Length: 319
Image (tube, rainbow, N blue to C red; front, top):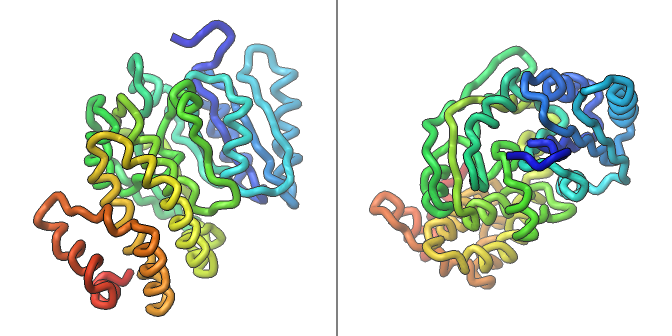
């Protein structure tokens, strides 16, 4: 049960130059049927009207009695990771929820998530749908599962359409803080590195099949900007060097280590051949290839090619 004067959820929303989407995003939280939450808006140095929009919501909430508390942080632009970290520092809720400023929640998302949470649950996974500007919607409903250890849960989550995205989990705040989790500042692939570590260390992870999150697809996002893909690859590599040894300390986490290294190098095939081979060599020199241990017959061909024939791997598995 929530402690006195402590909201059940802290919904943390990084905001950066999304004035055309911010109102829909914020309203999707405020109009929830479950109202036991605080809303933390982090204006990450926006140069459009996003910061002013945040301030208007704060002033409006101060005049309304009995409404959820809205907080705003204005900071110099430091990136999505730093914005999330700033929100976490002032959060008081039992559970943390992340919502990007250009996305929005389903109408009953918070009550659905609340109903799925059980005592002692470290993480609750819910599902997403992609929303396009032309009105197209692609739903990714997945089969849920009852509470499992983090290692057991990860073995199921890797088959979901999205696995590492920070905004598809509700995190027990005490668990998050106790483990000193923090998103890597200045990194544009912050959840790829941290989310698997969080899952691995969790004692109880549960998934529900309900779609609660609307993931907006727009041309300006990282995954649709070719110039940022190279930096994303470098950021993932940098994080893996830090995260893999920590995951290796978790009993039974070998499949997670395998998945992360193979996924990273498969992602790296988006780069030019010469760039991929450079990335492969730095990965090898860092000792990451030792984590490649396939746990099924199906995974053996890819693993063998990756460990011993990287040029052929690039040709076959290039994305």
